[in-house]
Amino acid sequence: MLGRRGSLRFLAVPPFAWLILFFVAPLLLAILISFRGERGPIDFGSLLQLSTLQYEKVVDSPSWVRLLGISAVMALIVAAMATVLAFPIAYFLAFRARHRAPIFLVLLLVPAATSFLMRVLAWKLLLGSSGAINSFLVWIGVIHEPIGLLLYSQAAVVITLVYVWIPFAALPIYAALQRVDRSHLEAAADLGSGPWSRFWRVTVPLSLPGVLATFFMVFIPTIGEYVTPFLVGGTEGIMYGNLIQDFFTRAGNWPLGSALAVIMLVVTLALVAIALRIVDLRRAVA
Image (tube, rainbow, N blue to C red; front, side):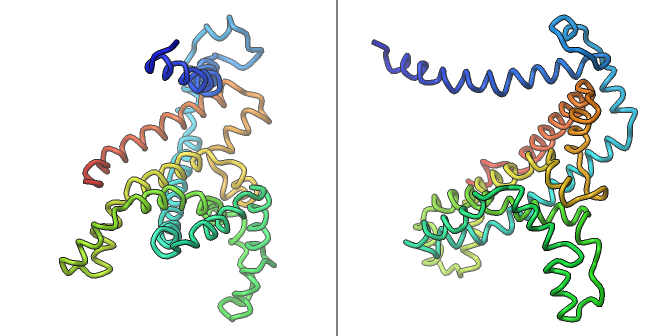
């Protein structure tokens, strides 16, 4: 019979094997391919012939590096907006909805369970020249002609991605707010703290773990997003993920696509590490 420690090790084997097979191994393979000198048939022997040629191509292409910077800024904007807009929803569910919270939670998540493409294409209809937003602005007299820049722009990509992420962004904040000890709020009220003061000095600091989790949950996948920019961004809203997709699908240049993907991964991890150094999570929740 296995002891407690042996049982824990046995239970850890399946998730550990899953992680190695579907995350670590593909990542190592992509890194090896990125160090190939030229594209061509990939075999085990060619993977061991390492070269920095693909990385030199990326460094010598300022437009690619600039596109990575633009994508990082857009991802920061999307993550910040989704986090700010999701906070009131999570606050309402945690503090105001009471016994109806499960019903509102279902209403929040059911639309998110529909097809991702359908939700993005719906915004394509809303933002179009003859879409609902332009029609409404013309009807109330704010503009005289439809604004063509609403669609196929960086703004369209940001708006669509924020809409897509809000239902999921509310969940970590909701979980953090549920863990807020209500006795802290009662103690603050007994000491004469008003509603806004209790919110800023008690609720917000105690919810920071969920807020930061939401921010990074949105930021990390958004920086490599390529479907939404392809559908609503046009040439103005193209992101770094579209560049990687083109090299893997249209150009068939896996070494260069892998090098671009590895660089994006390194930049993303560096930004997350810097953010965690700036925002001391332990002090924030102390």
